[in-house]
Amino acid sequence: MSSLFYVLPTISTSFIVISAVLVAVGWVQIAKRNIDGHKKVMIAAGVSALIFFLIYALRTVFIGNTAFGGPDSLKGYYTFFLVFHIILATSGAVFGIVSLLTGFKNKLSIHKKLGPITSVIWFFVAITGVMVYLLLYILFEPGETTSVIKAIFGF
Image (cartoon, rainbow, N blue to C red; front, side, top):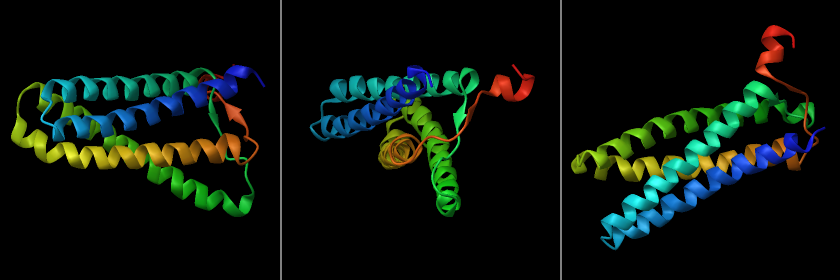
């Protein structure tokens, strides 16, 4: 397997972790009433999450998704966990966009209510994302990988 096969998931997972750490730093900044610092850190968290998504999406299209390579007895648990992660990540992304937009538009009453919820969801996204990475690439031998292009068009 190419080194890109292993490097891209590591890089993309790292960006999810970075985004969660930046969200935590953003919490500290707003607790200290450092609004400018909070804004900068949360923008960086959003950019980090976007970088993750771009790497993930491009990898999925051109290289593919990796199937679970662990024992069949764990596949159902892994699939349930993966679906949970996908739901969290999707809702977390929507909450994140809305949180950023309400902050930018100075709709602070909404932003103050939504921000903590968004942050907690994003922490769980990061944790479950790391677990998916560990299950796919570290704890077990990776399963088959097929690109969307190959799956759809045969090349």
